Length: 356
Image (cartoon, rainbow, N blue to C red; front, top):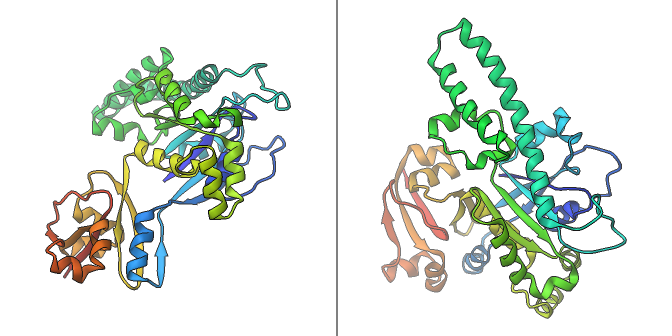
């Protein structure tokens, strides 16, 4: 899964990218280069299973992040910039809340909700241009060819254009699965799930969760949108510390977990993802799948042969398996269940697949 980190200049985009991926990048000077990095998804459940099984290898799930140059009308006219953003599965919009006279805001003042709406308007306008051009083309094609698929695409895009003209993002557009498939290839930016990441100043850190709730109330119930708050300056310092020192540093601000973990978890919720686990002496591994995945599809996430030759799955909650000391102990206690292909996998399930 790819998440594009976007925002106005000097809001902390690259800092968030570094916090998530560990990649340190120099400041851009007029470049529209998109940087790519991978974040390991922290998972204490996987670590606990590794303590039991002592595997040769532990493989965490990963998330890919794209660090984009500052968003602007000029950037959104660049084919390369747009193409890269359209490939992303979700957007993380970093919004400046911190006050710092040494870092001037391009609009002369710090106003988080104004900046949120301004960037949203740019994404909406970019989508409007794409929809309008395609509608013009379809109008010509429909005069030459009688094709119900062209008529349906035209109707869906007309509906999208009307929404965009009202300055509303395509995340609000209700579509049938068939119609969603018809316009998926356009990679509409305002249709992508978006996480609003409010970047606070150090002085606001002790009230981080309270301020996050305040912004969540301001943003309201927007379809396909989530809210998270971080203090980029503190998180950047945290990323350079040893685990024990980092724990004490977190506690001094009243934090229970690093911002990296909260941002990744928020991304999972936004995209409707979860992790199931596999465990053994060879490897303990986390697998990312959509919420609601069946055992059959979970098997396919590991290998297509597992899906084709699926017989059943042995299932236990990760905690049960840890407390039982492994599969043998869980079987003795009757805590290892046999499930068929239609079983809906739960977050934190440990699966052992049987296949022919």
